[in-house]
Structures are given as C-alpha cells and as structure tokens.
Image 1 (spheres, rainbow, N blue to C red):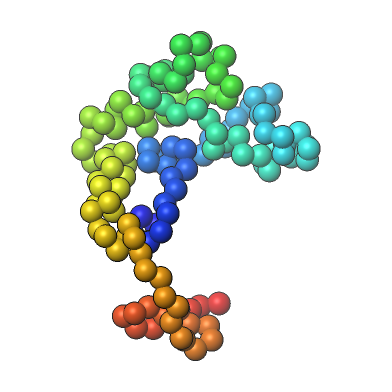
Image 2: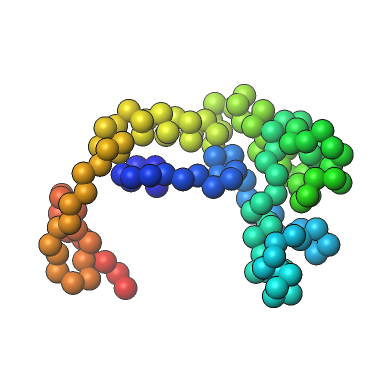
Length: 136
C-alpha cells in the first residue's frame, strides 16, 4: 500500500501490528451498530481499543485512569505491541512503517504522481511496463 502513488492512510494501530480484539465482553461494547442490530459481530469496537504506549499492564500508558475506566479493555497481549517496546526493537513493525514512510517521502513519483489511463483489453490490468490478466 505504501508503494502506491497518492494519499496513504494508516488505521489506528496498523503501524504497531495490533490485532483486532475479538473477545471484548458484551457489556464493554459501545459501537452504535451493535446497539442498532443487537449483533456484537457487526461492531467496530475490536479495532477501536486504545493504543498501547508503554508498560506491561493495561492501560499501557494510554491513560492515567485505572484500566477498568478506559472505554474499551485492552488485552494483556497488547504489552508486546506497545510503542515503547517496539521503539527498542529495530525489527518491529513500528520501525518497518517508519522506514517505509521515510522511503515513500524520498521517492518523487509517489509524492506527486502523474496518473494516466492506459488502453487495455476487457478484464486486464495494465501498467506502463506491460499487461497481466486479471482473475475474476
């Protein structure tokens, strides 16, 4: 995604390699979609859990409040994804994203892309370097 021209957006926690939290207790869910449908599986709360900044226990530096006061509970596994831990690990996903973003900024075609449409047969993808069939 970062190698494609145009605007780039990173979703909350993507740079930390955070997984979606799939086992939030029903009483913690706050997404209006869950309230409207009654289906916890339709909500977005699992990807809106507060980011882990530091430490070994919730709330992982996100807040000075006790862990039970943060709007969505953070699982213990978030400790290994904290910004503090990843900054100390040169092989972490945090460092990977920082390096990729730095590289992206250094490549002019990605900063200011010129887009042009190419003619191609139906059901194919084309690039200036050639064509490849597109599976349906």
